[in-house]
View 1 (cartoon, rainbow, N blue to C red):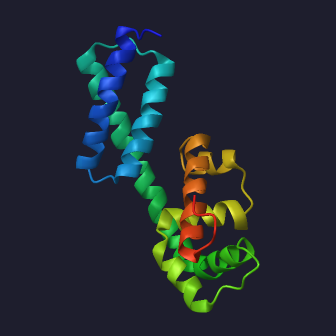
View 2: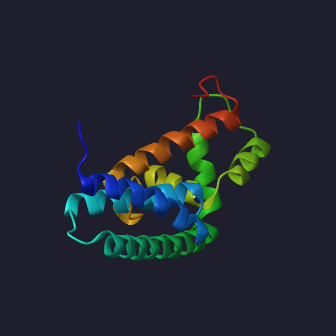
Length: 166
């Protein structure tokens, strides 16, 4: 499959976006997710802009998406602070193997999870949201939600010490 000049330019700019987002303070995961979303959006729209204009447009779009992401994280943090610890603890207990988790083990797991992971657990297993609903609420793709859930389950299994660590 041969790539058009536009596609090659987008791929090059996507790598630049990754670095740009990280200089703004985004984590590696945030930068990858946002640059992937922006890349797909630009690829689907087939914007007819000159390379310098396209670069500026994509940077502005990525920065805006990152700021929106951070605002959502703040709201999630507020909600988790208010309602989260008991609900997340119950979710982990309900979705683990029959072996009973000790309170200390549960606390250790909760401390290892970040805000985004706790929020994802709440959205999926307590609120019962679909993958599409979670993706829309977090302004990301369904594929990104699936991958984050997979990684989160794997992380929890590893923290619990379960047999299936992969």
